[in-house]
Image (tube, rainbow, N blue to C red):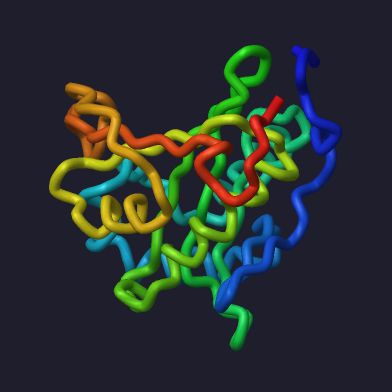
Length: 200
């Protein structure tokens, strides 16, 4: 639906620069670095993610993932980025603005992951702070939503530092690592940030 869709729709997401990291769409050329990082981080990531498929790290699966990301961006349904440490142009994680809803909502869902070797270094806090002006400025969203399992204290800290407010508990909200898990829901509104736009 084109109603209240910004002009950025159908454009390729650009590089979005933060203090020590930058966000850019993953490409086919990133496969080896992505698969290596996901592989060594598997034990760290699996408790917080949907159950990994057998072909999760295969090149063919990665190609399908990239095509999916590109199609979602073209159709203004979602925007996926690799999180790169700028000093060494090194992939450290990923971030998505998914499930974009236009019309009267102007909303998206924030998701992210970080490789195990890069935790507790402020990279994801930097990445989330970096994507907020993009979401409320370039994409003209009104609201960002996020959800975290209650035991994921690191993720909850990232959201709170970025200004997200807790809105309540969603029971058995997402199927994570093979079972339905409760999640705490958070949100940030455009007029609660320095951008100050209302997203419409």
